Length: 407
Image (cartoon, rainbow, N blue to C red; front, side, top):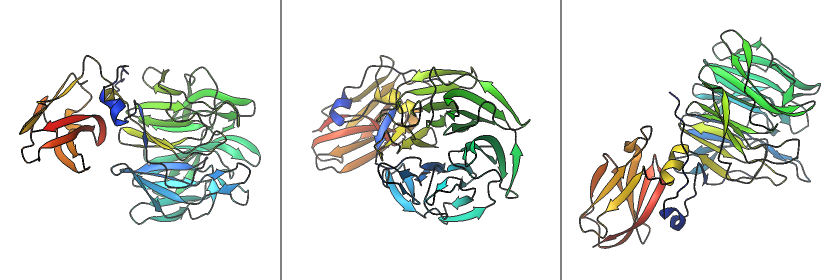
């Protein structure tokens, strides 16, 4: 079942005093590596990965490093370098517990058709069968039914629209139906349930906003609703809670950079504009998804970026107050207990994911655990008298805080 999240416009009063930002975009710790664009990203389990890419402002520097993001600690750690060396504009997909990265432009200026499998347990890259099409950069990829799909991109002969399917069981590729429409590079690709989707990108006649669905069962593409009213390339795309998202990018190479975001409903086959990306407008933003949250960073508008953002519409609703959502903590001041009172949550927001912690003036954190009911009683008699900050979090992410006095 696909749920649409209504965005309301009244903020909790605590947001301004705590520095929390209205969603659905929330800024996180900067990407662990150097600022860059044309990076490559994927997620495995509860971790996300970003690596490769380059800068080309006056000088051209390519990267071979990969970095792992842990959302529970909001921290980055470096993992094994990409085995083919410095590379940018590669593509990636995930099958099971392994990431697959390949193609791209190498440091010597040639295009690659190599592919490698990354094992997060051993932190080892292993070569797999080469991509069977022409070596290229700027391809797109998606996964469905346990197989990876790679296509489009720029080869030495020009833009492409061919597509290939990778089967990890026998480490082999087969050719599939080409993408309809003009050959292209710098498109967006993702999957929703059992279908792949590809759209936007740079063609021989400029950027486009066309959008197509791939059915692997019968190897066919179907034209779908266009992505908003303007053409774009070098955009970002991801899927959260069964809905597709495409945004940012530019209208031509090094052209007008965008910050708008669009949500795709595959049932209704329509696009709706949502709140803009909260970072600086840019092209080559890269993203991965962990659970019900997307994470995006890097990119360029002429200046390369390493800022990093989380996309969470549920948290956004909790950070914004309407008459239907009541969140109170009382009595305040108090002696031995407090009650967390929450009412009016939409049915798709799980109250069991809300937790409470108290923070002393010295910065010590006292976690009090999960909210279990609409009115949950917490015993705080063991705390010393004084002033505290209470903080409510949803699935580990703060959404409301305020002052509490313990007598």
